[in-house]
Length: 300
Image (tube, rainbow, N blue to C red):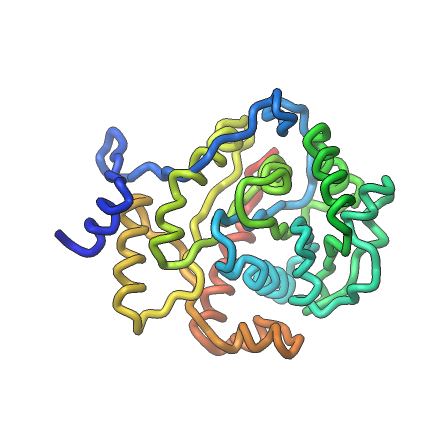
């Protein structure tokens, strides 16, 4: 048995082929919270959005989602797009990646005070705008999340109030796992980037994520979904085996971003990650992803 097949067998997964026997279905995990649990209703009316919305999601933490959100925001801005990066994660880490002020309020406290988001925008790398989550304490976070479970259009309404044009792109960083922010982002996304690493832990969560995505993919204006394997190291034989396992599991090759220590160093020094890695493989990968994201918006 090959290493790839062994990994899939260990996880108890068989490749499920479609009728043509070519493309494997993606299986991920979990379940959408029931309506009687106060979860987001998948049938709720949505507010039409003008800008393209890209949501970065993951089940596993520590896969480089926020770093990639920063790089894509800067990369798109450098390619002539107008980008707004939105931190939807209560950890409030995105302001560190962009080097913007932590002193200003963010969407967490502002939402609790029913305030607008326009004044929260801060200028960062290559001219992109950043809207941080901001600092809130545990009771405030719990209050916000209870409220969001009753307000499935919260994010859509706030994005619409920003009055962004069709020439703009919103990059949303979400917290890892199944949470209310994940579902708010999925309800408005035109493109979903599922961020993973080439390891068995991420491979094992594909079933869970499929179940979480399923209701959003069944909507009339379903987003496009791409799996991105981050921090790829082609010198590592096991990494290459895991990439092959992902390919067999998904029925197609996942997108890849190569590992580049200059991107990690950029965070430490407050530098633009695209500028730091522009001459490496990771820089090429990020530029390719940006070109993919610039494709015409198919969501109404």
